[in-house]
Length: 121
Image (cartoon, rainbow, N blue to C red; front, side):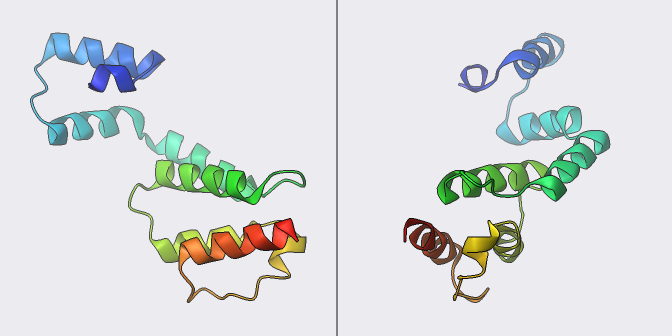
């Protein structure tokens, strides 16, 4: 099942790892995978992408949210919901952000839904 989820470099790495040592558990796989692919340089590069990420003028809010969430989970898989909410609002298009009446006490799904409603009106 793991092989079907990997592509290119990660798949090559997995096949080579299996040949060199037996990976017998999900925990062991995660540790090896993170050690190989979550290098400090990679994390810094992703953080740079997050700093420059904004919702573009013609980008649907739902697409922007998925892009943001995906990038944030690559940087830190255990990112707090509060941090995601702050970044979501901060990097929304200004015309939408200015009309957001919900604060950070609202749920993440409510914030996203409100932004989509504003975008549609």
